[in-house]
Length: 182
Length: 272
Image (cartoon, rainbow over the protein chains, first blue to last red):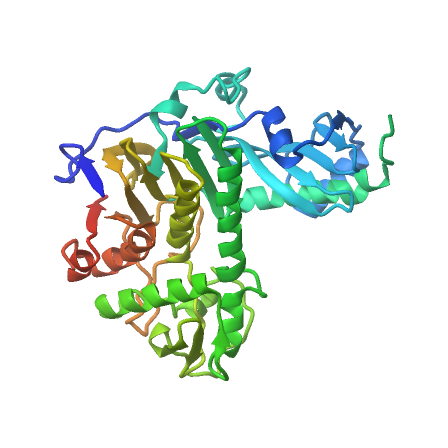
């Protein structure tokens, strides 16, 4: 064990503080998530038009108000599904991928991006803009400077609701889509 | 460098390794954490932990070697902290609405971790009914196990962070930040860490999110929840000790509690 305290850490004085955005991390890209969750499988994009009715039923079942986007759905050659979605809370925005097998059971969840903020809504376009076009191979500066943060991380309750909404999407829509044959 | 993150143990678990092409080691590390969640989670009514809570006062219960390891260390820390660390407070967290209710306990005289005894290395029995919650120690254990897997899979250097319970390994020194308890949106740089673990407890978001305090004094019969907004961190060689000892620091309010020396740990308190 080797700890080099910063000079004022022991004194308990005001330490160097970093700016307002606490965490802004890009972990993996959508392609990388596909490889992790569906190794060696072929995925084809299967966008889905989310009708108002479907949107409303997904909202009711998962208590997430942020609308679901139907253009980030892929089907695997063996009938599984890969869906990207995000949860937007008052203080965080988390983009994540869910893998479902052909029967609709969750086989994996990966976090793609984790953005956390205070003081103003994370959904605010201005704040989001700085991440547009960034990928995990092009980490934003904070990614490199601030790796390890002790002290509470936001709980993953919102994410649990988000994953639930993807399973609802399966039940209401994906389930009835036949496997694409080439 | 590779970074991945999954929702596990009720928080976000992040694994960072200093090399490329480490997908398999990282996958294995995540599955170990998943396995620990299945064994020791309170939320899952079928976990081994809940089987212990249901049965251990009636008969001897066979347990997984990992659960045995955690219970054994929990007992040791209970002893050396004079009872300040006790996993037997599950029912009080249930009463506060922080954990789901699987069993109704109101008509029982509930015991604590001190009532659990080992009949064999992986066989336990309890003198009284218990409602154990490993929430204050299992995350640290999971971090340690993940690090162990990464190292055995040939990863030289990296870190595992489970919602603030973190451990770094390898030759590199990692800068470590702690949230400022006065202003959780700010970070304090506390120094660099090499081959060590750091865990932090605090009520950073409890007030904002209108959640009750999850830090309970097991020695007091009254509803005594910690209300201080300070931040309590402990550095140790292994994360299981760092995790459990933050509770001793928060409840004793004493950075020099003999428990820390006993487990070669160092306490850091950041006042609000």
